[in-house]
Image 1 (spheres, rainbow, N blue to C red):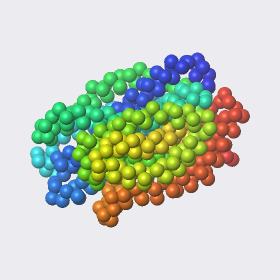
Image 2 (tube, rainbow, N blue to C red):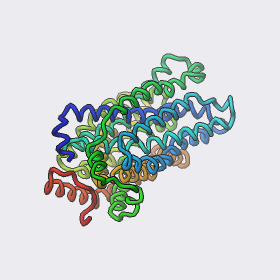
Image 3 (cartoon, rainbow, N blue to C red):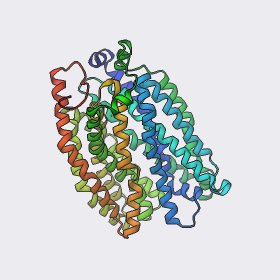
Image 4 (tube, rainbow, N blue to C red):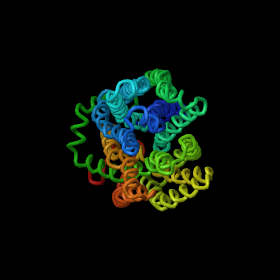
Length: 455
């Protein structure tokens, strides 16, 4: 079914599908990560500064709160994607994200409304988390169900790059505003611009998505009456689905969450809060590293099509573990002598290994589940893994640094978190990879229904 569609639509069709899906997902990640780029400013404007250390930790915790909300978005929207369609669902989530982001840009500060300001910020961050929790799974499944056999890893890997590119876009816009405005003007209204500017872009992206067609897999299931009436219940009651969820959660997704949020998100906090690098310089170093490594995602995605998803991710996890402590130590030394090129290069090394872990992930998880509950299973595995391994990693890492006085203490937490991911990917991920490849070879026309050996 999928292979036939790929042949009919041709290469231009899948390129357009990937581009349109990636645009909306990139905007959602941009909206989500603008908060990261403006954490220090928002902490200053929305929280009382009786204790600057506590205020900064609360500011970082608000980032983590949005991750707690993401599984709620998955519970709401992923079953909707399996029941009413992939396209309709990610149109709704994009609209919710846009409204929440513009809401933050319009929110009065602590000086204006007191304690209601941080409460309002928290509510809108939760709304952003819910939207992103429902968006990504639908977008991945949409692309995957259009992609030709043998190219699913490469096509879906482009969506993975949207997380880092969304952060890059946020950093560039925030940095441009800080360069063009004095500090008083930026604190007065300039910080609102990155949130408000997403409104017209989200409107255009929503219009584009409304014109997209539903996937051939979903259309065929609807035509033949095979759609699930309760995909969430079916997923949660299935032993095989739980095996897939746990392997993805504690393996591939855990590895992705730890590496991404250490290499990119915590890196920004590490530079600004621990090493006291001026925010503009920190943003620039991170932006350069992201720009260098963004093209690697489809390369590693294509490699996963050739040699297996789990194998590529496993190599990436090992290389990342070996590199992370020397990289952070090197960054600290480079900052001490203001060698910003060295800082950018070392961040890029970690970001490259992160790309190796992240790129095969969407296809890896989606292949674990049957089409009628694919988005639900994907969303649960991804978001539970994000909460356990990613959402509060910056907060825990910064807390360890403050508690121990060791600037590299947070790195130790990241390495410890990755060890179970390494073990699960090695012992169970490779086995799943092998089973799915064998199934595809035995019936290369029909896409694998997902699951583990003995399903």
